[in-house]
Length: 53
Ligand SMILES: [Zn+2]
Image (cartoon, rainbow, N blue to C red; front, side, top):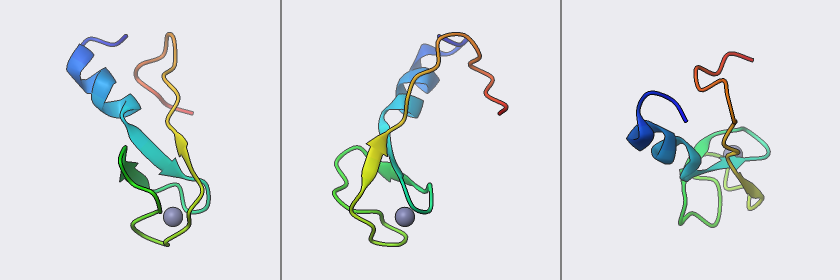
């Protein structure tokens, strides 16, 4: 959890395209950018809420 629980929730509430890594709404079935049907849930990290790589 980062400083902002709301932001954390929003971050994990998206689907990431496995192909182009675009963010899609949780309700998406296909990527909005490349139409790729393989989306994964964005994983919530335990500690580093700041991200980085
Ligand atoms: Zn895509």
